[in-house]
Length: 414
Image (cartoon, rainbow, N blue to C red):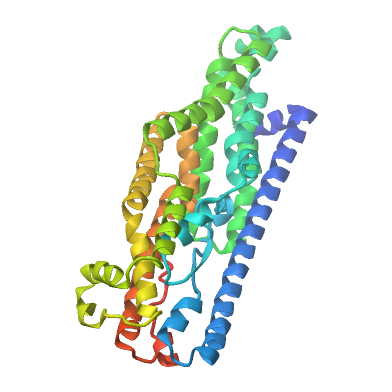
């Protein structure tokens, strides 16, 4: 087998070798861009966290222990630290950015405002390692394997080659294996180098490599099955190109449209708008009505809810929270709908192995829909903890010192 592989390497054409080199370069560029994006995200997180500490100190200089001043002006950072395989498919941040600066005001507007994205940029997609593996590598594999037999048949050599003793083992297997191995190495070498740079756990790196090999194995089997037919090489290439186009682009896109139609979602921008309208309306409602609605949610503060002043922080933060309650049902329906869409997409992935490989790579990279939903859930739970931490100071009139600020609930990034 080794001698056969060496022979096939010598016989491999210059165009095929150039294709392997180009694929390796593209994979290297993709992981380099991924590593740069990950490093930039980590630097941004470190900068925002340092900025929050400086802002807290600056706020303390004029707040003079007023919990309302702290609650209004202070920004609390929430972040998604990229994992050791994030370079595979870095999170785009279209739905949920890697970093959020949250105040204890109404939350839904703060979260859903971040879903705005440039549609032209979304259409362009993202050039990353997952894209190279799942879209470009199969095309090269098709180019290398589609005429494995038809090329020899059209050159008039196939009958003679097939008549050789153990032709399948001595000739065709090394030829196919060399081409598939060349494509695999062009992808795995940059992947391994990036994993070493990131200090990726060996088991996780092996999982990513296994997904790459599984994707290549699928396309190798499909290509060899078509190549074994009696059709002309041009016909085989056209059929395989059509299969690639259908499996990687047409069917997933059509399924995406069908899933979106089957599972409608409340519009994020509409939720943010309704949230803000409800908050702004709080200025004009009778204070007693606002506080009555608030203490229905937090009866422990019923004895401290009365307000006779033109403005009090406890009243202000009460109607901020009521703004979130006004859109809570729509927000929950949106989150449930997104989860439902993702569940349907995962089921479809079992019918389309390349799609399942893409989903698995995104999961390893921490850029899938499940990671987005988990992050949003952590932000919501943390925001509630922050609000409830401030309420005793707001309603009880207790001063808030630096020690109290430091004791506020910290964001759990896991």
